[in-house]
Each structure stands twice: as structure tokens, then as C-alpha cells.
Length: 104
Image (cartoon, rainbow, N blue to C red):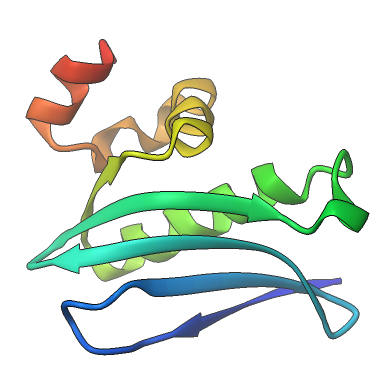
């Protein structure tokens, strides 16, 4: 079973969502929040857990979190941008300018 935890720091500091499995952190997404826009800068999976779908699960759960918060997303992280490209149900979270930049 996986759970996701959020660490809310200062509004202008990097924030992190962490995916845990059996009490162990297996992946995370870092982002900055500017108003109602989450700028996703980095996604990482622990090396011992690579190839098990944790990165994709982390991205989906992060996108669901952003949707619940009613935030837009700017995926600076290439992996995160590709996850949105592969899951078009999240395209509405991108800002219009971001959709043009990424051709989505």
C-alpha cells in the first residue's frame, strides 16, 4: 500500500510531496508554489525502487493533489511533463501558456 505525505514549508520555499510504501519513502516531487501555480522542478525515485512504477504513481498522486487544491501546474521537470503528456486527463491543470510551450 502506498501513501503520500505533503510537507508545507514557507510559501516561497521548495515544497515536497513524498510517496511512501510500507513506511519507506520511495519517490518525491519538488515544487514551488506561486499564487495558485505549482512549478514542478524535480521528480525522483529512490534507486532501490526504480522500475516499479513509483515515479508514475508519484506523478499521478501529485497531480491529483494539485487538482484538489485547484492549482495550475507548470512542469519544468521533464519526467513530470512526460507523465502529463501520457495522461491527458491532467492537461486541464496546465496553464494555457504552458500548453503552448509543451505542444499539448
